[in-house]
Structures are given as C-alpha cells and as structure tokens.
Length: 342
Length: 107
Image (cartoon, rainbow over all chains, first blue to last red; front, side):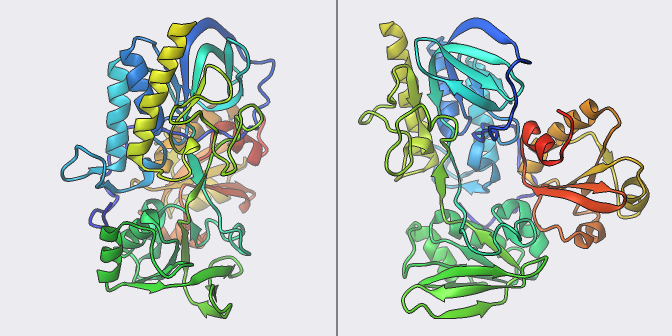
C-alpha cells in the first residue's frame, strides 16, 4: 500500500462487503420464506466471500451472496493502493480490486444481494439465513466470510470523541485535518499505510506504537522512517484521549516505565488491528481461544456439517487479502465436496 | 449516493434549522467510500417515513462552514436536527435497521 495516491477518484464499483448488520432487526413475522432450497449461501463479500462466489458459481452451484447494504467489498473498500495482491504489477486500488472480484463472480452467475443478515439457523440439513428485511433464505450449505471489525483502544475519551477527532478511516477523514497534527495508533501495515496517507493532509503525524519495532513489512517501515512528517513514538500507548467536544490532546504512556505525557494533536486514527466478526454465529459454531471460528485443520469445515468459514473470521495470524481469497477458494471446494456427498 | 436534497452553507438555515419536521442530515464527500453506501439507505428511510422526517445531504468539501460549525471530522456523519438543534448523531455507514433504531424512527 502506498501514500502516493489520494482517495479522490477512487472507483467505488460496489465490491464485496462483509459488514453484517447489528442484530437489531425485529424481523419475525413480517418476512417471506423463500421456499427454494439453494445449494450455497455466502455471507460476506470481502476477498474470501467473493472468491468463494467465483468458485461456487463456476461449479454451477448458483451461490447467493449476502454482501451487506453498507460495506460490500469489506475492508479493502476504504484502503488506497494494494501493492501486494499478486497479479497487479503496479498495484491496484482496493475498491477497484473488489469491484473486479464482484464482477468476476457475477460473470459466472453469482447472485449478489446488498442486504444484511440478521440471524442464521445452521443446524440440520437445511440451513436458514434471515435478513434484516425479515425474508428468509434456505440452503444446503453456508459459507461464513464475515471478516473482522476494527479493534478499539478501550481508553477514556475514545467513544465520546468518535467522529470529533477520533477516526478509523484515513481515506474518509484525512481531509478534515489539513495542516493539523495527528496521532496514528498501531504498528502494523495498516497503521503505517494510514500514517503515510495522512501525511498528504496533516502537517505532522505521530505514530504511537507500544513496542520498539514495527510488525509492518520492511518496505512500509522504511517509507515511514523516510517521511519527514512522521515521528515515531516507540514503547508508547494512548492512556486517554482528552477534550470536551473535540480532541485537544492525548495522554501517552510509556509501556516500559509507565511515565505519562501529553501530546497535542487534533486527530487520533486508530489502527491497532481487528477482531473476527462472529456475532451471527458465536452461539452456534465453535470458536477458538482467539475468537475466530474453529475449522478442521487446513479445511474450512466448522463444527457443523455443511457450514464452512473463510477469510479473516477464521484467521488470527495472516489476515491478508490474498490469504482470505485463498481461504474462500478452499471453502468453495469444501462446500462442493459436501454437496456431492449428500 | 443519496438522491436527497443537496443543502449548502447558504440554505442550511432554511432547509434544516427552520424545518417543521425533524431533518436527517447526511454529511458526505465524493471521496468517501462508506458515504456512497449509506446514501441509498437514507433514501429508503426518507421514502418510508413519508414526510415525517426530511433527509438532506451536505457535501462537506463544498460547505466547510457548516461542517466546521458542527465539528464534523468523520464521515459519513448522520445527524438528526429537531427544532434547529442537533437531536441525535451517529458516525459511519450503518444498515437501515440500525439507523432506524438509533434515530427512534418508526420501523
């Protein structure tokens, strides 16, 4: 990922999303039950969901993909340039990549619907998926590829000042911090990508990282070191975000000696990783100690026959677009084998 | 993008603050991916509420005075105004069911 491109002019071609709705819908009596028993329903539309859609569609399984109403395409929809997805020599914009995956899945007949899943019933031979609209769909197999959601710092001021200086989306919100000083929290590729991107707006970007080295790739770390607007605060974490109705400063705590100091910034971008999004299935599927959906070995098979999981929702380690896509492929093939065995 | 009425720095007072019905204001910008996704959701809400609430949008790049007045630093920012005051606010693209609940609208 690089800081060279501004977000303006991104192609938001619709993509693949993975955000699920909150489970708020009171969708009991109002909905219709589609009586067709489909072969496979895919929940989520990031690289895992769309790749599963491409493979199952090519296997003539006519997948239905519930891509979410508001975040189809998933996390890559808010990134800038993806430099490490194989096959794109000069890189590709995240939204364009996801638009391509969507179009590729549709080309083979995937039925992609921009709707939110409210609940699932996974036991038994016929699985039921109910949407926020109340409508219910049935299938012999389900692939869960709901991705992950941004982890919060959990410090004082974060929630209250969210939208008033605290942000999770550099490409959305960098504009508001022209010539201002900012903090980016985190030390992975995502954090450095955000920091580098934000230097095109901000006068100064502090990277607050709790360790003394980055988890990020060397190429991203070198770009951060080389950028004159970036200053790195090693062994540091945010203790609180301060301000009445907007961010005034943050309290930074040294993770080695516990000393606290104030850092004057007007914005805080949080990029400390993400947690698997399992709200839909945590009551029905076995999870691991990491909170991911438990799968059998290298397969995508969950604790319930006919239910498969792919992408970040099963992956506590790699969490890359390409590993998610590979995982979606595995889920599609596992689902196909399962359907053949029925 | 939403089909909602485009409100500017100069029309915000008349269209939003002096409105007889509650107004949902969608602060958005062209470059913001999640804004593109939530626009049609707000259109649906506007259609279903049938005049009980009004939905408008403010392009924060073209109307920075209004965006600054309300301290907008993250978009999409979706605010509900009642009687000229901010009644409720939420940040980020959310599905229809979640917005209806947050804004206390009739489902």
